[in-house]
Image (tube, rainbow over all chains, first blue to last red; front, side, top):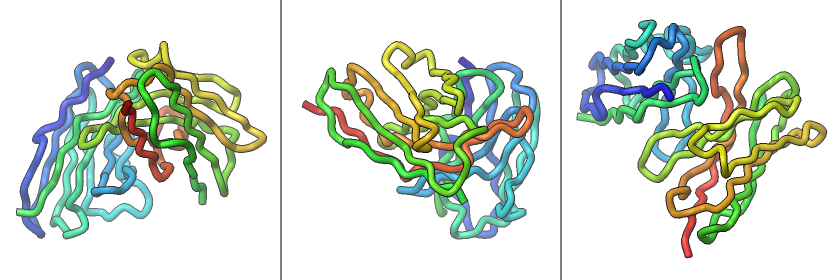
Length: 107
Length: 120
């Protein structure tokens, strides 16, 4: 299985901050990476596919980059509704696997 | 807009067979893969497996010996069976649509989640 490692596991930030989360794959996954947001008690929501393609309706403050084994997820100018847990997920190889999550909390 | 509605029991005893069904409303069933994903309390997400409208399945090897995913295209529903459950199978179980756009695969629509507890 491809292991997905996110960093950090948790992060405290303030409204208006710029936040970066990294995701590292245990082997080359090309651009086959998605990012999801999960708020407490809610289902995950797809934000970014193909490493950098922002889904329709997702605010432009969310972005993704990277390829191969190293990926970055960025939120510019944090909003109150952005405090949640974020997961990366690879689909390059079966079984599809997720990172362990990054919990973004209010400072 | 597609909606996924899950149903099934939420409490099982060890060694029993977990069974959940996901009904698909407001969208096509054909042409897609359909997945089951679970999330233990306070933990991350684990993909269980998927099925397409033709009945082709893929399973997570970690669960393959105990999992069966089936589909009824005429009813626009798909189901999960997990045998010999233990406390380690306690989790919120989600169904999800899994479209493929060329080489891109996503989980873009999710069921509401079902908390399954395994306890004697």
